[in-house]
Structures are given as C-alpha cells and as structure tokens.
Amino acid sequence: MAQHFSLAACDVVGFDLDHTLCRYNLPESALLIYNSFAQFLVKEKGYDKELLTVTPEDWDFCCKGLALDLEDGNFIKLADNGTVLRASHGTKMMAPEALAEEYGGKEWKHFMSDAGMACRSGKYYFYDNYFDLPGALLCARVVDSLSKNNGQKTFDFWKDIVAGIQHNYKMSAFKENCGIYFPEIKRDPGRYLHTCPESVKKWLQQLKNAGKILLLITSSHSDYCRLLCEYILGNDFTDLFDIVITNALKPGFFSHSPSQRPFWTLENDEEQEALPSLDKPGWYSQGNAVHLYELLKKMTGKNEPKVVYFGDSMHSDIFPARHYSNWETVLILEELRGDRDAKPEESEPLEKKGKYEGQKAKPLNALSKKWGSFFIDSVSGLENTEDSLFYTWSCKRISTYSTIAIPSIEAIAELPLDYRFSRFSSSSSKTAGYYPNPPLILSNNETLTTK
Image (cartoon, rainbow, N blue to C red; front, side):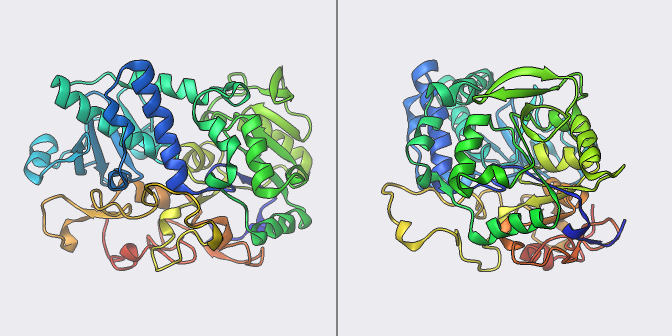
C-alpha cells in the first residue's frame, strides 16, 4: 500500500455525523446523556437517588477504551496483548496487589485476536465514543451502589440500561418528545452543539466542486439528523450531500448482508418500503454497504471507486468500514486536541463562555487521572520504565484500522485536497498516521516495542 494518502485520489467522501461532522459541547452533552439514564433508573426502576447527583470530579472516571465486565462489575483497560493494565470495581480503582490477584498478567478471559473481538456482547461492553462515556460513569456508580447497599457480587443491571436506551433513544422518541435527551436538544441546541466553522463548510463545497460524491452515513434517526445538520450547516445542507443514510445501525451497515439490511425509503422521516437495491442518490434509512457500493460504481462509472469514510467510533465506523468494505478511514480523535497546548473548544465564541451556570464536567477528551493515557500505559504497580510500558489495545486498533487520525475535520479543512498525509502502516512508525502531530506520549516513546 502507498505510504501516503490523499483526498484528491478518492472518488467518494463519506462522513459519520455525531462527533464527526457535528461536534458537541462535551461537558454539557455528557451531563444530559448521564441524566437521561440516571433519571430513568431512579424513577422507573427504583435505583438509589444518589445516582442523580454527579460532581465535576466524578467525570474523571470517563476514559475511552474501557471495557465493563457485565457479570462482575469490573472496568478494565487492556494492553495490546490482551493483558489488563488497570481495573476498577465500580468507580473504585483496584490496588496493584488486587489487580495482580484478579488478572495476574494473563490475557483477559474475553480477549480474542483483534478482528475477532466484538465491542459489545452479552458478557462485556466496550466504551469507545462520547455517547457511551457518560454511561460508563453511571454503570460504575450503579455497581458502587449495589455493592454497598446489597453486598452484590454479580450484577444484572444491564437489562435496565438497555431499557433506558429504548426509552430515551428509540426511533419514535424525537417525534414523541419522550425521554429527556431529545426534548432538551430541541429546546436549546446551542447549548449542546457547535456549528461547523466556515472553513469546514467551504471544504465540503470544495470537495463537491472537485467532483467528489459526498455521503452522510449516521446511526441517528432521520428527524434528529435533520435537526443537527440544519443547526451546524444551515438549511441548505442537503445540497452538499448526494446520499444521506440515517438509522444506519452501524456496524451492521458494513457487516450484514443486503438481505438482512435492505434500504428503506422515507417520507416525513418515517420508513415506508424496503428496496431490493439502491438505484439512485437520495435520503434513505438503514441499508448496507454492498448495495451502496453498487450505486457508487454506477455514479462514478468506475469498477472500484475509492471511498474514504470519516468517523469517531472505532467500533461503529473505522473498524467495520476498513475490515468489511476495505474503505480508507479517517478517525476523528478528540484526544489529540489539547495534547500540545491547543486551545480547548476553539470554535466556541467567548461570549458563550459562562452562559450556562452550574457545575461543569471536565471535557471528556482530557486525560483521566484514574485511567492514565489512552495510548500507552504501564502495568499498575510497576515502575514506569520503558520495559513496563505497553501500547493500549485502543492505540493498536487505531494504527491497524485507520488510514490517518485527526483531532477534528477543522484540522485539515484548509489544506489543499491533494495534500499527502503519511498513513498508518505496519512498516512505518506507530506515530506516522497522526495529523497534525502524534500524541506527545507516543512521540516520547517511539522506540517502544509491542509486547
């Protein structure tokens, strides 16, 4: 594979919406998501009222790349070889001795080779995006509460979390104004969403003018997608995208066969009829990557049009787009923001600062004191020497499945379309694919070998 990647060489440019094209004001959106679940658990399922109170310090627990063992209530952070670097029971971090006794430097019981391991199963759940992270804090606090009040050793609260998802985020919730999340976003979108900077809007138009086919593929439902796009891009956003696919149910969009996931037509944001194939551009629901690619062949007149897809979730976007469809992938990794003294939340105007009163959560893309670096960590309790340092499982997946990783679309919007990015590859350094800069911790440990 070529050492460099260029947008100019792509025929089709696809985007995820949430946390990719649409950036959220994370401290506000995280609290809203947390409350949408906590209120449901307390009011509908009888959980402890303590769950409703969350302090700014509590948010330090949130870190991408954690797995929750659904049976024993332990959260774990994995090394790239499947061993456990850090762990907690609920929010209580395990001391080195307890960690050694529980996991003992062995491969985690659910670990499988990279491609084989699901991110969601009946036994564990990986937290890999900003919609997930408030749920990690809530579940950890549920474990704390059940351990303290009932002395529980095994846990079956996950069914109640799933019920909370269904209540707040089901397909009809936006239209019915039910739950907490959608009514609040509708009431005050500016509190939770950042509008796209002009540089990004111009860049999208530049891609269009260069003859690229533009796709939007989101697991958000049609009505919510429309609200977000109108707010961040303007009412004429549909002129930018040739194809909009909502309720895409990723990663199944990429991994399922066409017969399992047909495209559906939409009318007034509601699904109407299933389609045997995809014959023309437009706005659709559900679907599959196979039928989409057939349409892209027709639209480009090429047997193998080159597609690049931008997304923030390794589980839903990057891994499946690369693994099943062999698309180029650009990971939006906000953890790269602020790593080198970047100004946080640059796109928020100063006059909005301080507009919303009350306790603030820490930005979820900031380093967690409890969990350490997203990229590299030492085995808990060992001296932090190079011999004890490991790449995290999350870091390995980035370099394996992403073409490049960037902190935001804004970071590349003013580059020429033929700019040549250094891509991740097994033959180059672990830092090659990060733009504009690799994380400092990776730069400082570039000689680290995979264990």
